[in-house]
Image 1: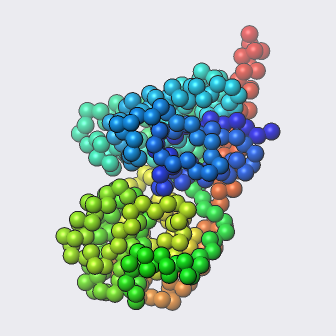
Image 2: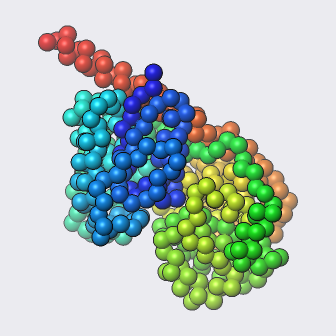
Image 3: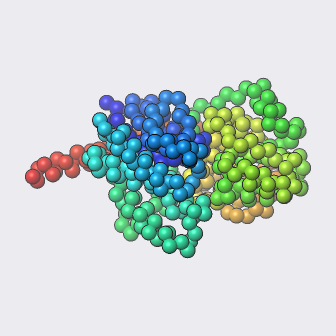
Length: 403
């Protein structure tokens, strides 16, 4: 019999970026295995077909999609908590909460209902606040929030992380080992999307990509901790040495900020900004490129865009980090973290080496198909659910026996 799961996501689901992709694909994989999931989330965002979504009450003065930490979250999460309590009326077998704020809300709901809480850990809450410059290292709020972060983690019945590095980082914040931590890697569709050449040619024309240029693609949030500023500085060096190179930069929200940077660097003729790309259209857009790139500087978050690159066989240049190596293995082209000149040099070398790209592309596609399946991830989630539910039954039995 399938489980009845209440999922909680304190974010503007769905908004076509990494955290949301994980939430969406986990739900789809669990639904395929016969479970029913209701997702409680913020009032803004779009609802993917086939997903049961309930939203907090609409707040008309803050109705746009917001990325990262912001002050509106202070009351958004209160409204979301109230909505989650209402949504938990009736049968609920467990609560699956995303992000630390979601786990805090989920903890209250789970304890009131007497069901387990599974916390989907996608990086450090305080580290994200620092990355987004919502906090500074000298902020008086930093230590209290770090204490709150650890308290949430210790009170979850189980925690799942998207990488082994994430699990290691999580453990490093606690003096005593956390119990029941499982790694559930991000995944991708195991069948490569079929890209129609005529459709791809039409998209290239609509985007205004000049003919005869090699394309370097970036797909993700346009924010500094993703390294978009570094990417543009590197692009300047690449374009100076290889004027036939074009950068296709896909994402949001910092479109105008980075367009101004590209203008100031005098490279706009060799850079195309698409804005937000729907998740389902990502493979088609990426198929236009010769290589992919990620200069992500955050060391605690996942890097799901690399899976999208691998899915379409894009050889990839990436800042070296444990998460990147966990995803790409020995098939990535690694650059020392923060070294912009090395980033530019590696992009040039890979563009110049057609034979290396011809080997890496198919190898990356095979690697992602065999190592990163959402169905496999759902199996790990089911085993985690079974462990916390069994533990809960034993605990209740022990209490009855002692009474």
